[in-house]
Every structure is written in structure tokens, then in C-alpha cells.
Image (cartoon, rainbow, N blue to C red):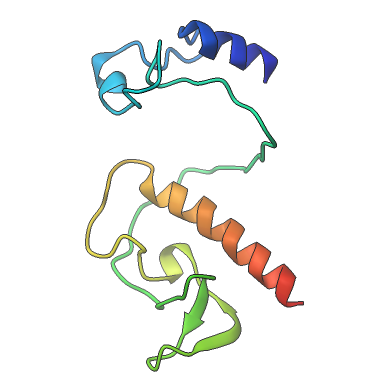
Length: 120
């Protein structure tokens, strides 16, 4: 993290060239300088193994804010969680852009795990 923060602070990604192209900079954070694709990190970090897969869901089980599957009445099914291709997309009928399904998976994976652990 120390090395990454030096690179991010300088605004030059020597390892992966993030922010070198106009395309990268367009999708970056314009308020982040000197490179809209990098910023120094702080706090606690988590690592998650990522694997390549296909994108392909247009529906699934409806869930509540904790990721619990819900009945047609809206009542949660205790102990049954759904996420990813098994659940309805939190973005509805739209696709906000590249990485959206990954971020949805990471966020709801965390929310579900935390809720399930607290429910025990």
C-alpha cells in the first residue's frame, strides 16, 4: 500500500498505466488530481479473489436491503439470501457501465455476510 500511495500521489501508474489514455481519464474522477484514476488509499483493505465469467442475468429473486429473498408480499424469507445472477439486478432495467455487476457483487456480498453473521 505504501508503494501504491507513492505512485498515486505522483499521478503516474508505473505498474498498470491507469490514467494514461483519454478513455481512462474520461471514466475517472475529474475531482481527483493529478490523475483521475488514482488516489492514495487509507484505512482497512479487503482482498477478494476475482475470476472471469459471463454476464447474463435479466431477472431473479427480489431481495430487500439486507439481500434476503422476499416473497411476493414483500416479507423476507428468513435465512435465504440471493445475490448476483440469482437475484434481480439492483440497477433495475439499466446497466450503468463496466464493473457495475462486480461492484454490486462486492457490496451485496458484504451486506449479506454481515447480516447473516449478526442474525446468528
